Image (cartoon, rainbow, N blue to C red):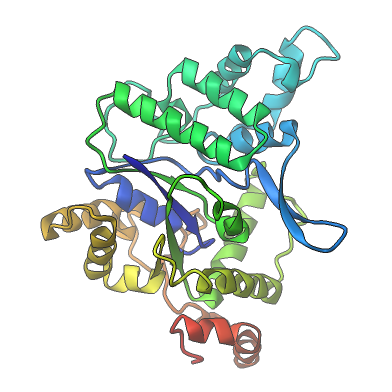
Length: 350
């Protein structure tokens, strides 16, 4: 068994890719949890050099458990914990791990939740996949970690212990997904354990349209990780996409990375997925790939035809939506801002 990380890019099919790999009989997937950004971020030093620094313990706990679909706790969770501590001056960090995990478990009722004893592993798993004791170990690791690499190794160790207990040792990969880890991807360079990373990219003009619609939806739903005043400026977000692509391009010759395009995955699924499975050393029988496609396609997951829009997380599944949505002037501006990176990934100006 070895870890496999889907590290991006944002609104480019990372969730779909996770579903596909989770449906493969040699993989076990986990719902979105950003193992890197949940514990730290890059900050500029006084010499203007960016260095990766850990968040403070409270931020790590709140981000790890409250700002991901892996656990996705309501904001009220934190106040509830403090209220039940019976000590007015007590904070979340002062509570015993068992109490915190108990309260998380009681709050955690996500859509499509499956109990721990459910052995249908063909869908991404969530927080409650682990035994209580391992969840407490995980909580301590988040709270007390001093080093990203040590934290990752602890997470991987707990996963492997859980899988061994469930007799899942014949699986090849366990898959973690973070939609926008590209922005902190340099933090993985010093990992002591070899890590394979998957990057799925999408035409930035389409990805930015999806990003704006997704953020609007999350603001409506009052998601814990979204700020009501988040910027929704199309061209600023497109520029940010370009910065991330620049990071991807630096690693396209790195043997530990595999880069694929959303458009290829969308329009030529069987061929594109077979190449990825071969790179991973996984069984790539056409019947296996067809079974995965029939379970994970846009139509199968949403009940809608591809291109049929709905105000949901899985919105439209479109390719080249930008060509219809952007004005002539907006298309020119988009190419001026991101043309270099779009062209490098094989996307045309028109």
